Length: 558
Image (cartoon, one colour):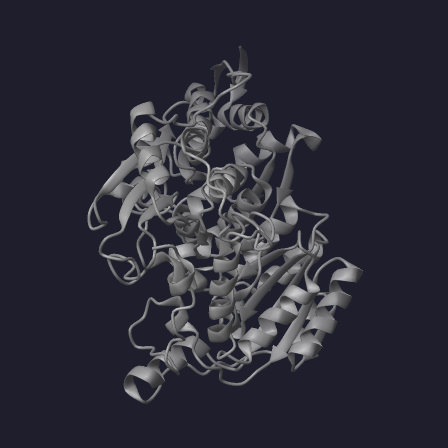
């Protein structure tokens, strides 16, 4: 026990927990916390972006790509509300993120006195984008608050947690006992043997079992366990937007969501792993057969609740549940590789209709190494990339999930590059979304991050324009007044280049990645056709041509 300020206790407990990479915008309510960090010298590595929204985006990218807890710190009020978009994205994508937020003087919380940065009931806002929250009322409570937050992050579903500490608690002194974390802590939920037995019996008796893998597979680090079970069952694995790379697209059983539609309709048993099994705009995907039987493997029982169809529940961590099922199911020996390949070709026919996006997606894949990370923003190229960009390693395609957070891509990629300094990191964004965080070119340059941002510039909020035209026949508010992006990058000291074709992009991207460090590539484009009929979550967009015939009907046993 030692006499410490609350800020010193915060810094030292974070260090004990191993949370030494911090994304922070300092401010008056954080002064004592920042000074506590300063006193520890090289124990911490701080990244200071140019906007508070980037603290949470960077922490999310750091957490997902690096497999470690991301930490963001902001002042209360406007500081925290600026960071909420990134926290909401992390919540949607099961990302382990610790949000540390300052508070007004503890004696004035909730009084409505108009204190600096005061907002009504900040704690309720923290709770809206976290799975757990806590607040320290006295300096001596700070270590236990941090310890509990970390335990929550490492238990159950990995979603953000939030702690609040008032500035008088950070500046106040007390005799404080730090808490040594346990040498080993496993918060994973084991599978119930009876649930496993019932699910294994159904899978073993299935004629054509199929696995639908969601983002929870990646969040749990369950890729190897998933591949082993799929191989034992010879079950095709359909990967959603948030689970691409859960098994490599090189794998003989791997399917993207479009190819998966040809397969899922034929499944007699569907194992849904780590997924909400919900589409973005409708209660349920409509592609299953009425006779399909369901098994839901999820750490949360709600994932098997209505409006999903009834089925068996295995409530467990994805790794432990998949391993238990692998040990319990009967092995199959008839290869499903030819069937999977036919479904892939069926999907490729549909991707080929969406041009020039497919050519740009192929250019990206041709330039980015297999272990490189693509951070996929909401652009016309990005929409198709969620489906058609081949992914070979876990967490090498980063998306905003169901939040669909415009502007998330570039600042999130900064966090990815911080976590993976020796890997290629590429962010694609539109000129609209890039406008949210273009000042972060300064952050990329300041920290010499190995990151290339690709800006597709059509002078519009392109997707909004497309939707308005399709729905109403006219547009409003979609035109943009852009800077010269090449000159802008030059002003920040970031190398840049302008291209206007997929071949030009591939060549420029290869060159930028070879040089290392930050770079910007502007791609001038015109209006593009929609890919949303393939994504399948907006009824306004219809297929440009009839769907190809069922490719696998004759490949299944009676």
